[in-house]
Structures are given as C-alpha cells and as structure tokens.
Length: 336
Image (tube, rainbow, N blue to C red; front, side, top):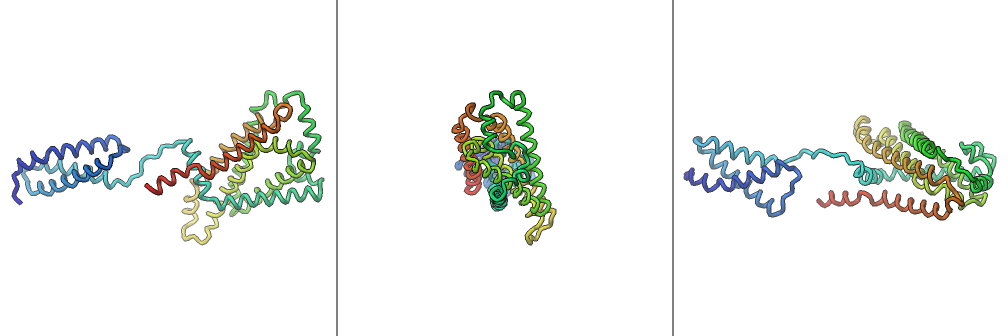
C-alpha cells in the first residue's frame, strides 16, 4: 500500500491528539464516566488509531510515530479490558446498612432454624412454669426474677429514688459486654457442628419463656411489655442472629457433601461470620443503652404506653431494616 506519509500524518494527527486527551482524562480519574456519545467516539478513535498503527508499521523511517501510536492503542486496550477491582473503601455506614442485612438474607435458612430453637425453648420454659412454679429458682438465673412479679412491680413503681443514679453508664457497659460475650459464645459453639449453638439458643428461650409467662400469670402484662420491649426487640433478635452465625459455621464444618475442602469452606464463610457478629455487636450496644437509660424506668416516671410504643416502633424498623436495607444495591448490580 502506497501512501503519502507526510499528508497521512497531518490528516490523522488531530484524531490522535483527541484520542490522547480522552485517555489522559480516564487515566487521571479512573471513575470518570463517559456518555454514550463519548463512548462511541472513543471506540471510533480507538479503531482509527489501530488502523493507523497498522499502516505506519510499514514505514521504518518513522519509529517515533509508531511508538506513539503503540502507546495510545496500548493504553486504550488496557482501559477497555480492565479486569482489576477498584480498591474498596471501608465505609462503616455502608457496611451496616448494606452488607449486614444482605448477609443476613443470604443465610436466612440458618436464621429460621435459630429462631425455631429459641421458640421451642420459650415453649418449654413456659410449660415448666405452668406445671411447677417453684422451677423459677432453676430456670431464671437472675435473683430479681425469682420473686413474685407483682411485688417487684409494686416496689419499682413506688421507688422514690433513682436506683441507677450515677451508675447508668457502668450498667449499660456491663449489659453490652455481657450480651456480646453471650453472642460470641453462641457463634463459637458452631464449632460443635452447630449443636452447641442450638443448645444455647434453646436455653435462652427457656429463660425468656419462663419470665414472660410468670409475669402474664401474675397479671403484669403492661409492666412486662413496658420493661421488655424497648431493649428486648433488639437484644433478643441479636442473640438469634449470633445463633444464625453459629449455624452457618456449623454448616461449613459439616460440608453437606460439598466437593470443596474444609479450609475452603471456612474461608468462604468467614467474611459473613465477621459481618454477622459485628452487626450483632452494634445492635447490642444500642440495646444496652436503651435498657440502662430507658427500660429500667417505669410509671409514674415513664408511662408504659410510651415505652410500649417505642418498642413497637423499634420492632417495625428492625424488620424493615433486615427485609429492605441493601436491596437497591442488589438490583443495581443485577441490571447493570
């Protein structure tokens, strides 16, 4: 093919300069997005530069032009066929409101099993209270729950002094650390192929069922709801989520005939376990604050209607959070 080299370079140089300017912008800002028209123009310039490179290769007298075009085409090829993942920026807010609920939904079957174990424990605890009221001393680990519910209600409603005065922060910290330890233990018991996790969930359910029925039988339903709902609607699900994580760990250990090694199974679920227990810790921090600064105050200091309403709002928001939070991100990735 015979061409006028000087005329060829003069005619094509504006296209090369334009192509280079686009590559420079993309090189400076990797997240820079081109419009559809600009993408079409970029593709046209890429094809033209590639064609020019093929033509110029026949001229050994122009090594600088050839190297220049090779650089342009090489840079464009690298951008078009880029496969490296962009560096992930850790965002606690994005992690909690997107990654955490998505991870929960991904292992929803484990959650239902954990919930079932807890509910069975509740039924057993309530049944034991029905057939033997003296079983409270065995079923309930806290001394203030082993007495008569009505006497406790009367004592706390008539209290003239703030029994947590000056120690709310200490009490709140104790609740956070205690419940977090329980949650971590529930997760860790997944190492027993999930059996220990189920036992702990059942035991927690036994305590909950016994306490609830004891107060119902004493006619203290309003007090029970006002005391338990504000922190319980977050604390109890958090413990169940820890059980969910324990069952995910147990499932990875069992393998269920999956043709991958134990090491690979554990490596695969480890990020989800960290996410679940991290989310549980955040939930328990909130529950600890609410229990120390809100749940422990009863009528006439705080009307039960306000406390019950607050707990119901928390429960609704929690359900919506786990059902809907992060779903937009999934849809964006699906239809991108």
